[in-house]
Length: 138
Image (tube, rainbow, N blue to C red):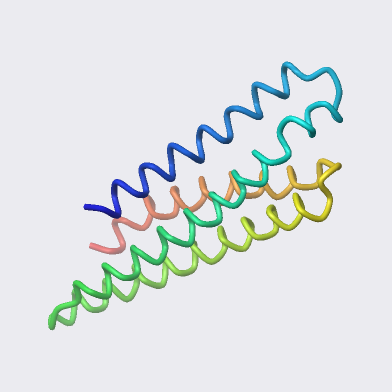
């Protein structure tokens, strides 16, 4: 139960930290002013996304591995789900790292937004893949 509460807090924090710079982008007259206001929040948000993705993939893998039982069909299904969790988690974490590195390395450019655009598509593709894979896992 503690993991659910913790992940909800991380999700709320990530969302809040993402919304605030969005409002600042509307209110800021120049790019320099926006960066002065939001650079730390962008960095914190990217770090929270990285932490959240790593934590959720690890927790899912842990509980899947913990709940293995002797049934062969269940064992095969858990192996498939574990492969999916590790694969999608690794790809999203890789993009989180790229985004964080771009924010740190090129803090005065928009280079980090390219990684964020890719991230959003990865999240939606992961969701669609998991929804489409439901029939094959039955």
